[in-house]
Each structure stands twice: as C-alpha cells, then as structure tokens.
Length: 377
Ligand code: GMT
Image 1 (cartoon, helix red, strand yellow):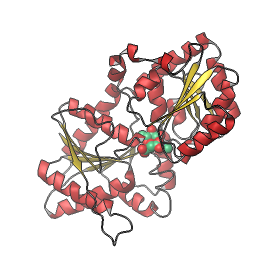
Image 2 (spheres, helix red, strand yellow; image 1 turned 30 degrees about the horizontal axis):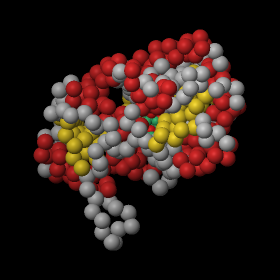
Image 3 (tube, protein in one colour; image 1 turned 120 degrees about the horizontal axis):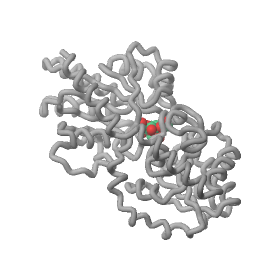
C-alpha cells in the first residue's frame, strides 16, 4: 500500500511514533511517503520504500505568520497525485488534520478520493486543541477524518469530554521496537564515563516544556541524592532548559547533574539508567516512560492522563499526584535503596513494556489501512 504520513519532524513523541511506524511499514513492503517541513529526526533508515517530501513555506513581508497549512495541503495534493497515494495518515491534529481535509477537498475536484486517518497524540487535544482559538477547527477536522485514533484510553476520554465528536475513536497505544533493543551492543553501555560504581543513574528525557514540570525533576533528584549517591542525566532541550540549569546551580548540585541536550541515542543513555522520572502535568501516554521501561528502567511518574495505563504502581515504578515531589522522592528511594528491589522493578518494567511491542501494534495499523482502503469509494 502507498501511505502518506504527515507529522512533526522534531523530537516530540508524535513525530517519533509516526517515524517509527513509517519505518516499520516500509520494512513490511509498504511504500511510505513522509510529508513535513524537515526530515524527521529519527528517520535515519535507508530504504527503497521510504520517501521524504519537504514542505517549503516562502517568506513574504506581508505575512506575520507563514501559512504552513496552505503549503502542506498543496504539497499533499501534489504527492497524492504524483505517487498515487492510497491513504493519508496524519499525526497530531493541529494543523495536520485540517490541512489533510483541505487536500482531500482539492483532490475531489480532480476525481481523486483519499481517506484520512488522524491520530491524536495529546496536547493537540488537551493543552492546545481545546483552546477557544483552535477548538472549532480541531473538532471539525476530527469529525471529517475517516478514521480517528488516540494513543490511550485516557486521551480518548479527554477527546470525547472536550469536543463534540461524532466519530468512533480507536485506541492504538504507542509502541516499542524490541528488536532495536536486542540488537544493542551492551559493551556500548559506558556507564563508568558518567558515574562512579556506587552511584545510581537517574534520567529524565523530554522537550523541556512547562507541561513536563522540569523543576519537579530536579527537586525530586535533590531529595534522592541526599540519601542515595546518584547522578541525574537531563536529556533534551526546550524553553525550561535555562531555568533548570539555574535551579541546579542554586541548589549546589551542578557536579551531580549532566545536561546532555537533544540526543538520537536515547536507547544507549537508557541502557545505563537505573530510574526514570516523568513528573508531567499532563501526559496522554508517556512514550518516554515506555522507552525507559523497555530498556529495563523503572519509572517514577505522575498519575495523570494515560500514564497509569503504562506505568503500573508498585510493579513498573510508582505513580504520584502532580507536584507531589516528596512522595516521588520517597518512591524513588524505595526502588533505589536496595539492589535486589531495583533488579525486581527493572525486570517487571521491561516485562510490562512487552505489552506495547511493535509486533502487537503494527498489525492493528495494517488491518486498519486494509479495511479503510477496501471500504473506501
Ligand atoms: O510530550 C510531548 O511534549 C510531545 C508530544 C507530541 O505530540 O509530540 O507527545 C505526545 O505524544 C506522545 C506520542 O503519542 C505521547 O506519548 C505523549 O504522552 C504526548 N505528550 C503529552 O500528552 C504531553
């Protein structure tokens, strides 16, 4: 099948899911066309089945904001026509579902019918999408998609609560390609270059946006390191990076915290991590937590959104209320203070992560594409 995938090309979870899905579909013989404004960061796979089409937005002095939706829908029309695309799968509703709807209408003028799948990822519904500035257009694009999926039960409930949705919403969870972890060379795990043997390694990975509550990560770590010799790895970059560095300096723990910036080697970093912290204000699923668990790293997270569907309290890690840093620190210490307890949580975390393995999720997407193509006229 020929599938057009629209996503954000950045380090955000929706772009990662879209890219990994496209790569996996290409491996199964489908022809995949990524359509976005830059090459997706995880698109390092070379394959005859993977194509990339860049959306250009021209600068013009009249524009305060560049009309990206217009350029995207124009590009979608030309890629669908040129390559005979069967299905458009857009990840993150804003503005992708809207642009896809416009492309669909333009293609109709030429007698081409194309079905659209919209996958909702989180903030396109919770933080941004339901804002009065966008709500009407997001609701319209959801209702005019042929199939709508959400990455957790919690996100489906949020969507039904916040919007007047007339469509079924299928839940298809985020996934992990375990083959990648199996292929990983353990000798690459250079733990000693970052921490002493007696130190535990605690990791946080995100795009450092306010929703991630970066200052809670540092507060939790501050409390933990008072009792357990440890290092904190801060992976990613974003608007909260500078204040996080200041907070670390103010607390006098700069020797114990490493800011690593954005990384394409998350799996290597996770392979020597003992604990992962994700204290988000809202999180539709928490792909970063799942990636940690897949690499045998238990998770201390909040109990918001879809996180309780991924991180099982007392089994794969612990859940706390948003902002409950004392509780999170207490839970972290419970896991880290004794090596046999840590080993138990590591094993349980990885075992549970297997429920979200690519080989379980990929057929669900493939069946959805087949059914949609067969029934679409
Ligand atoms: O977490 C982010 O800030 C990135 C964001 C995105 O849309 O790129 O991630 C969302 O989608 C991920 C993939 O489906 C989910 O695992 C994340 O939980 C979700 N983030 C939020 O809901 C805040």
